[in-house]
Length: 417
Image (cartoon, rainbow, N blue to C red):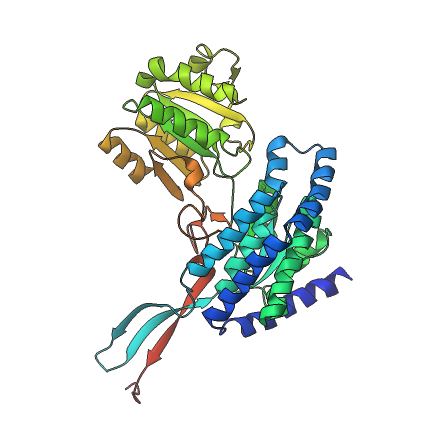
């Protein structure tokens, strides 16, 4: 029975994508405005649905950081509504002429943005992503199949009701956004086998999910992999800036992918900075796992292991390592990082330039928190994920990253000789 259901989802999305691709921006924007309005008017119903998920998750023993990812409040729903409205203000990428040139034979050759088609989006925990993904996909002309985590099933159903009501009221294809309304894991495998109907899969979750999708998918995959992010405090760095950036990177929301997992600090900065950094982090409840040199200086620290350095804790846990120079910091990032987000705090221009050139991550932050690697913060309105791949997209994936292009060639009767 699940195979029949999966085939229906995929076929319906394929048909909806053909209907959606040529729809004008104005109609898509009207739908987005309707979504924002319905989020506000249905806020209390969404929160009530989310409370069911929160109660079940707490009973299942989810960590405080994971519970925070799952939680929806009236304030967070208002933030969601504002993000949707911001997407309205962004240019529609569909139909954008990327480049054009006149050939010697008079042909005008252009590359024009087009939707990817059908997106299968698999994600865990964060129900706000349901709205982000739907908004970005529809505005960029893509149909999307949403498969959220079982822990957020009630929240996602409530949000899908908002999406469907808006699609119906604005006359957009009802299957432009479909929710997998089941926690049956076999449905994921069935949809991953349908490369003839689904154009791209975007998984956003833990390592086991990403590895499964990469192994089973019969279509291209844009991966939102581990966020093993670093803050490197250079020898020449402002003390207050170093503390503020490190604490914000780790503690602002420790359960998200752009939260820092490791602090690297130049040996020359240790005497005046490490005690203050450690105290500030510990005052926020952070458990510090320390290299031998830093362990001797930090009361309450625990010995670090290579496994710690390579782990995305997504919790109030941070590894600490003292390095002799920037080269050692960069080498550490290359060995243990996940090419997601890495930051340097420095007053030295040459150190900043070296870090920028040699750290090959989707986002390199210079004197700024790792938490800014986010579609909304980088002016994209929202994101469907942060890709750690090198193609088709890298970093936060917004509307443009949900498009490809086609060549359009205009002539006046030319034939090839």
